[in-house]
Length: 369
Ligand code: SF4
Ligand code: SF4
Image (tube, rainbow, N blue to C red; front, side, top):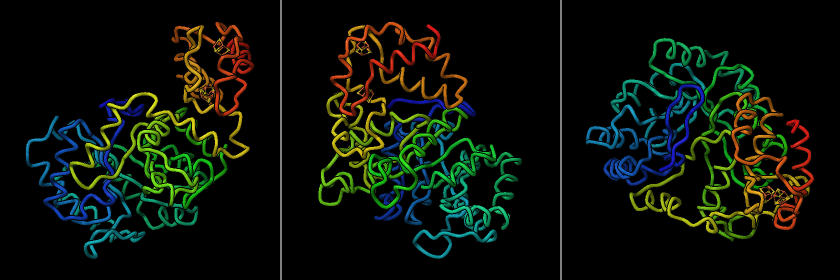
């Protein structure tokens, strides 16, 4: 496992987390086994907006057995607005009393005494966000935080406009957002927002120290199947994981699994070769507005002058988005834009047609070197 640090709080979070939409499909005992396999292999971040109620007693059972690291090193996203009271399936609710009873039930079933990340649950319209506040759920969540039962506030959405509205409040430390190449290129069910607006959202989160936990990294599996993919070609899990991890602010990807074997399939990412993670094939699907824009993929490496081209571009974009740390990170690099000799190797290698040698000149000018 590789870990990233959450800027607000300093938690060390595995870059591969666990999503639970299908995890408890086969019931409580199977869910407990899947959780145990995840925890034993270094996964320490779990999203609890699952599709099946059995995930909660299943988690409770896994936590009672000895798990790697113990509760202190495990982090859970619990959603205020996901209702598990009605039966075996998930339902959405904006009713305060229902939310209170559902959260109490989830705490009782799991045996969890505190909530690492209390989430404003899945709002995709400003009207729903207003209703969430006016109906008292946000106040309830914030009160839980004041009492120390909730440690961080989070927000899940598929919509950049609503994400920005909630970020404007300055109350969240984690955004759960759907990131994959299809949505970023405005393809598929949740490809909301303009290409540039989505990228600006990721940079804003990084600049403000808000982590992103990624949902739908595989587009609900559609991107892995040529017949279902909006690109009419299949990507691999490793390509999708690398794509999301290269985006600014991304802390973890909560990927779905329903068996220990599927957990191991996800973890195979860490044993994959760089060429198995290379997603430069995306350049053949990119819309016109994504052409010529650096996606930080480093497909153009190696630079003969030793520049980390992807990172230099990322820090440059982040500094201009207002990230106070990015300038320092840039300065700490071993080679800078001013070391570029304009050899044009990267220009010829870049599948996204970025005129990188010219951009390096621009970056060097910006940093005053
Ligand atoms: S210049 Fe092209 S190949 Fe290099 S990091 Fe940027 S997008 Fe990737
Ligand atoms: S043009 Fe500059 S950044 Fe690109 S490969 Fe050559 S030296 Fe490296």
